[in-house]
Amino acid sequence: METPWGDFPVSDAHAHFFSRRFFESLAAQTGAGSGTVAGKLGWHLPPDDPAELAGTWAAELDSHGVARATLIASVLGDESSVLAAAAACPGRFFPAAMVNPLAENAAVAPGLRVVCLFPAMHRYSLHDPRVAPLLEQAAAQGCAVFVHCGVLTVGVRKKLGLPSPFDMRFSNPLDLHAIALRYPRLQFIVPHFGAGYFREALMLADLCPNVYLDTSSSNSWMRYEGLDLKTVFRRALDVVGAGRLLFGSDSSFFPRGWTHGIFQAQTRALLDLGIGAADARLIFGENLELLFY
Image (cartoon, rainbow, N blue to C red; front, side):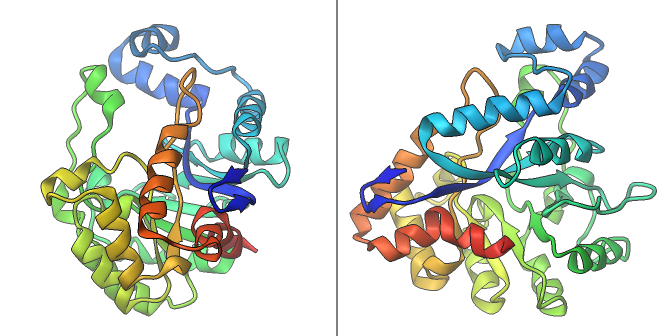
C-alpha cells in the first residue's frame, strides 16, 4: 500500500468475520430470520459458504492495498468459518476465534492463530482454573491470545434490542499481569489500547514484554480520559515502543467493508508525531507478520 512513509505491505490485526452462522446466532436470539436481521441492520447477508465471504474480503482488501488481515470469528463455535476462509485464500488471513473457557469442552481448534478471550462478556476471571487449559493449548499450538479488556459495547446487539449482560469487574488489563508472566512464550494482544483502561494497559505492557496493544477501532473510550488519538499514540510509543503496537481497523460488515477512515486517522496521528518509516512499517504490518512467522 502507498503510505506517507512509502509503499510497503500493510496488515490489519483486527477484523471481524461476520459469517452466516453469526447472523443465525442473532436470529435465534431475536426470533427473526437471518435475512430479517440483516435487513434491520442494513448489512449484506453473507453466503452460506464462508469461502465465498473470504473471497469478498480478499477483493475488498485488494481494493485498499491491504496485504493480510486477522479475521475474528465473532460468535462462539464459529471456528470452522475462519478456518475455511484461511484455507480458501492461503497466506491471506490469520484465523482467530472467540472461545469461552467456561463452556463445556472448550478447546483451541487446530489451525487457529489467535484465541480470543472476552472475560467481561462471558463473566469469568482470567485466574479461573478453567482458563489455564486453553492457555496451555494455545502455547502448544503456537497461537497468540487476544484478551478484550475495558469497555465492551456490541453495537449490533443494541440495534436489535438485545441485552448485553457483561460484567466489567473482569475487564482490567492488570488481571493479565501474573498470567503473562507465567506464560512468557505466549504472545498476548490487548485490543483498543485497553479500551478505557489505557493507563493499566501501558503498565501491563511495560512489565510484560510478551504483551502487545492493538490500535483498532475509533477508540471512543478516549472521551473518558479527555485524550485524543495523537496523545494516545505518543504515550504508547513512549512506554511500549513501535515494536509492540499492532495496527487494527475493527472492520466487520458489508457493504461498509474495510474501514479506510480508521487507517487514515491513525496515519495522521502518527505523522503529526513525526515517526519514521521504520516504525511505521512495524506498526502497520511487520509486527503482525513477526508475531506469526
